[in-house]
Length: 105
Image (cartoon, rainbow, N blue to C red):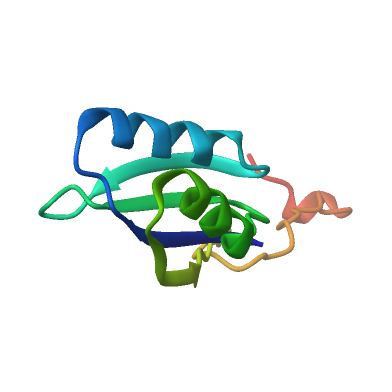
């Protein structure tokens, strides 16, 4: 199950941001991550089977303050099969006439 989560982490300097990204990258199942928010204090993590509680605990050990804001499932868009507008029609066969009177000149 692919999911996206947003964590609020206290990141005051560039060193803290780098450390938060390293911790998130080391977590199992993470496919993408980014720092977002107006004050650059939110960490967005997306992945398959990421445990949000374990990730938050690791961030709290290193950076002291981390809370979970949003955890939501990412729904994949299904590709719609192209349907032909024309319905299947059986082929039209022309059989030659057996009689000479009907033959085409």
